[in-house]
Length: 469
Image (cartoon, rainbow, N blue to C red):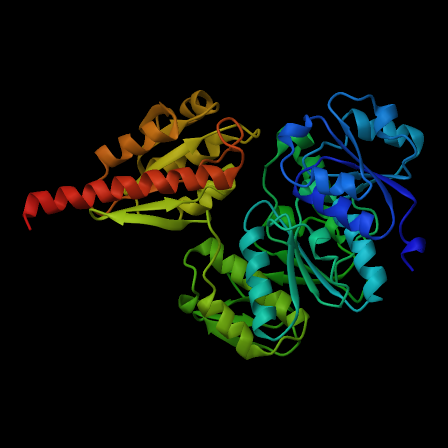
């Protein structure tokens, strides 16, 4: 059966999570696999010996494209590898299809489940991780078998050892969408489209085109769920039935807010879901995420009780406006996933004026930090900069916010702890990538959380010393 789906030989370019999982899934199905990565074997982590024992060939270091692509029928591309780089360009010149891990895994899953899977794909500049996880939580509470997969952390390929039908709920990045060909989601979601990853895509237009690929293969029986409040999302072409969501009103045929209630018309009839104030996650951005999740659940004919239960009990995800420490009347909030200007702006909107000590900086992704200036000037009593983008941020905020350069997270946390007053929030929402000082945003957030807990403990002990036993 899989012989008609998969070719004889595949080169997997990039041995991170998705490449490792896909290589294993292909070997399971009798495909000859070459794994290529510019790193030496000692830097690749676990899995090399196991896959080599199963017959995989490894092309590591600076091997020429000819060696990497020798005999390949497909080139499978990990999301971190730009499609315009040397090996993908050489593959295209040879007529070798360049396909995302998501694309190949989808083809395998659809072939083996014979079309019995349901696919939900969520993309967007911000909110896609929380929205994806919230949708999965709703479907699980409704008794559905769910694979929460994709850019959220576990590749789709990692679920291919079990061949039964299920609901695949996938977070999909613009990097993955660049190299999909036939991938089709029954319900596709775009939370918003604002400037991000311009260092890779080159322009806002190219970035938006990549996001629009999530709708490219949908038909009239599919659903395109879009944020009606976001011009970037609403401007994308879609072949499926449009289902809008809005926190400002209840759009026709979609989900929104009326008289304090979340309301949905996505199933045709208008019905109240839950009071907006009862959502388990606060903030305007989470109201948008919840509305998108409601719209998706209704498109999939999900009963109301599990939707209500998930909306009021979902605990959220790490590094997304997560309170990681409290002490001395000061809250410490980890929003390390806020890796672009729009995400940081949404995080700041949830706090009162003048009560935030904001940690900004990291590796610049081409964002316009000037857009943060008015909001940072109102909300942040002090901005502490770290990383490579510090100087650019300081220039952008000059004259609107008080900014101090700290260079490292340790110095920023020490300065925040020394400056914060009771009722303040120290917010890490960097508006930048983490790769100048950390392996990923999770590592950055974990480091901040450890430092924040230590600062809170020092503050608590200081209060005890002041007031006595």
